[in-house]
Amino acid sequence: MVNSAQADAWQSQGLSEEVSDKPLFKPYDGMYCMRKPMGAVSLRLPDDLESRLSEEARLSGQGRSQLIREALEALLLHRREERAQAVLRKAAQALVADPGAGAEALDIAEAFLTAENEALTGADGAESGADGGPWWR
Image 1 (cartoon, rainbow, N blue to C red):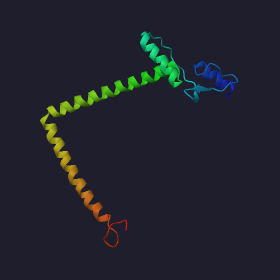
Image 2 (image 1 turned 180 degrees about the vertical axis):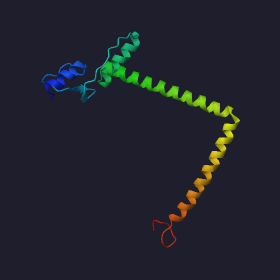
Image 3 (image 1 turned 30 degrees about the vertical axis):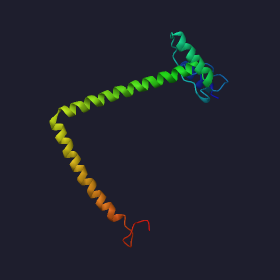
Image 4 (image 1 turned 135 degrees about the vertical axis):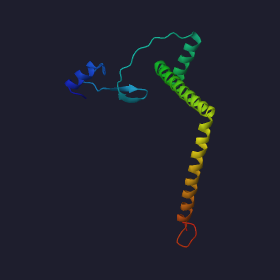
């Protein structure tokens, strides 16, 4: 429950429609959570897509709006990842086109190989037990 000052503040921000004596929580997707303001979107669907959506809603027990939100979130995430991959591909192509970048990458790899080998050599000695055998004995 909230006091009237909190209720007025939240109501003015559009965080709850009913804040007087009622909790600010309501079931959402099988869980209780704080109400979030949501914008409304109207869209037109081809009849076959609308019937498949309705069938999925019936089979899953979720509302059509929830299924549309999930599909939209998945689409937007997929597109964001595609754009990030495109940026990485472009950067990789730029590195491949620059002969100096390839030589620099080999120099860096060689320096790391030396450091890794030194670390492994030190680790091999530290892993032996007091009797010179494996550390686990």
